[in-house]
Length: 479
Image 1 (cartoon, rainbow, N blue to C red):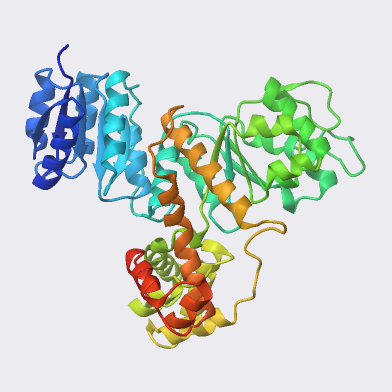
Image 2 (image 1 turned 180 degrees about the vertical axis):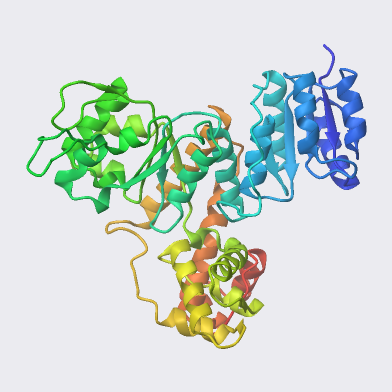
């Protein structure tokens, strides 16, 4: 049996060499080039069973070549690589018909496995949508944790699957819901958001399903509910864990039968909306306590998506700082910047309020600071006045946190790659996620004193220094 051929396009000769060696060892025949012209010629000649290409090539952007390839050979899978790791890169790759998107730097084993899946099954062509504007990214961050989120979002925009977004308050759950809508099939329809925690319990059913004239005291006219307002679009049910049981029963019927009745009404109303739900609460615990319906949970939890708290993605803080400072200036606040040391000091804080707290801090600093450049001292002063919040709900412990991390890691993997187990290395992955916050917490508790932090952790100072270097954690004294 002839070996399958993989076509590689990347202007970096080192990457071409590494990919060629890895794929050759895996049993593939490989042809590599630095240009889009050569890649297009090979594809036009019928060569290749899969394509692996960088986005930026010397003679043409791969996103301009991919639609031509898909038109000529719709079943040829294309795997896109990019060092410009934003959500728009992932979404554009999906919109142009790419089989998958891998941010640079990537794991060679994952790339080889991705090529294997691509070769074994025909890539499903995806209709190309109009390019979304890139000057204002809906979600900011280039960390490994966010890259996984981007890949899943990019795939979900091409479906109408129900999504359950889980994350602490302030992690950007509504931003993700809006991205799923704005870049998805229903973007021409309405996006309607409703916060279950902000509505009196006795009014939730009327809010969601509407009511007829005379349905209750004060109902002087028919009022459309959120389902009717979101028709042909997306309904975002925020803080779904706060929905009362009686409203949960009615919502379950909508999800099961695709219809509902308004409060006081008799005739069923057909509905065509995509449901995206979100919560910061542990729904499984609420189910055990009898506060949330298990059958509704499984209806909503078709595709679970966990948003990491800011303390798990502190490498994104510089990008977030720039983003929020530009936004503040665009809204009329003074144009200012933070020193590099001030930005670094933000990484040692736990951010119980997550991205929302960071944005509020920056707005406050921009408004009250006289100098155009904000110093570390100013940042530390404001952080020292921040109220203390518990980082987890009561009853949480390290065991449950590790269990939640492992479950969400596997869930995200299965959502993106099917049923096959992910590659080994979960132990190192957990250490990589859990160790930096622990080291930062020890440094924060000891005001950056490494000797005291080492004693607190129960390790020697040299070991701490090695870990700080390996985890790229810079020590800023004073926090």
